[in-house]
Image (cartoon, rainbow, N blue to C red; front, side, top):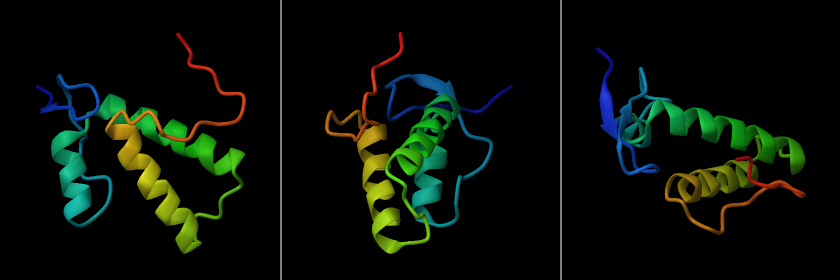
Length: 90
């Protein structure tokens, strides 16, 4: 039986992550509140942002930007950055 969480993004019980995505309190928070589906969608969106904006993920400003965008993404914030020319796929 898979572990279920009340997903912060989708507001419903969905399959949870297999492990915390990174160490520390924030990783544990995501483990407890983010579904596997939402996390996979974030990884795809994050990759798009990194590529489109040519971010160097080792730079503090890029890390901060991605952390802010991750929070907006999981909170369904309308101001989350999208790639140029991005249209929602249905």
